[in-house]
Image (cartoon, rainbow, N blue to C red):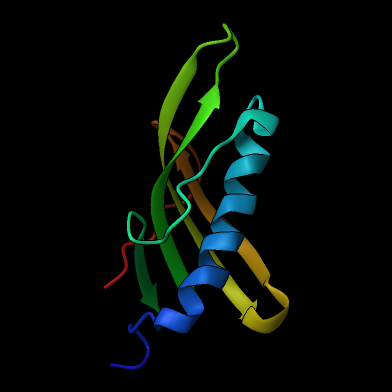
Length: 103
């Protein structure tokens, strides 16, 4: 059970990693606005692989504010230093990497 349990104290770190990954894929990362709390964010874990789902509001290439749904999966090597390897990124249907079914 411990391998799949996402501890509350780890969620903030996982969310920070996920935000950093998403920002790398946005056309205008300076306009990104993520939800403040983690209540609207989904977390799943299987061993050292973590999946995080959420949304980001950002400005598109036409200058319009849009909401982008995203999912990222990454392998954590050291959570205390936020060391990870990105495995999968999907932002509004545009994906990179290979999705791993967790659970």
